[in-house]
Length: 242
Image (tube, rainbow, N blue to C red):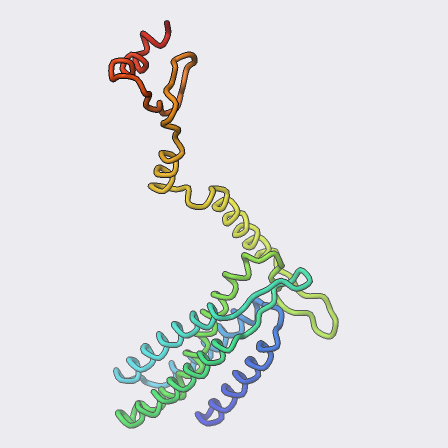
C-alpha cells in the first residue's frame, strides 16, 4: 500500500472511531483488542519487507514507545459506565486531545526523519500502522481494566441489526475474578492496615478506668490510678487469680 493512500485511510479510520465513541458505544473487546492487533501486525509485516537502517529502527522504537504511552493515557481518560447490563465507553475531550497529539507528533516526526535521513523516510509511513495499532491495543487494555470492575458485562462483539451481542465465557470468567478480588480487598475497613491500624487501636484503648482483676482480660491492660505497687500487683497473675 502506498504511503499517502495508507495515511488517508488511517486518518479516516481514526476519525470514524472518534465519531462513534464520542457518542458512546458498547465496550467491545474484539474491536478494542483484536482489530488493533491485526493493524499492528500488518504494519510490522510491511516493515519486514523493506531493509531498515539504524536511523529508521530508532525512529520506529521511539514513535512506538510514544504511541504506547499516549494509548495508556487515552485509555485512562475514557469514561466507562453500565447501561442495560452492558459496559459502555465514551470518549472525552481529553481523549480527543490525546489523539490529536498522537497524530501530530507521529506525522511531525515523519517529516523530521525525512529531512534528517531521506533514505529512511519510508519508515515514516510504513511504521504508521504499527505504532497506531500498538497504541490502540494499550488503550483497549486500559479500558477493559476499568470495564471489568463495573457491574455490567463486557461484550466480545456487538450484535448487528438488532441481533444479540456475542459474549465470551473467558471475559465473563476474568470479570468475575476481578470483581471477587476487588471485593475481598475492600473487606478491611479503610485506614485499618499496618501502622495506621496500630495507631487506631492504641487510640481506642480506655486509659481512664483501672482493671480491677475481677475477670480474666485477654487484651491490652489499661493503666490504673493507684500506686506503682498496686499496678504491679494487678498485673501479677498470682495476685489476679486470688
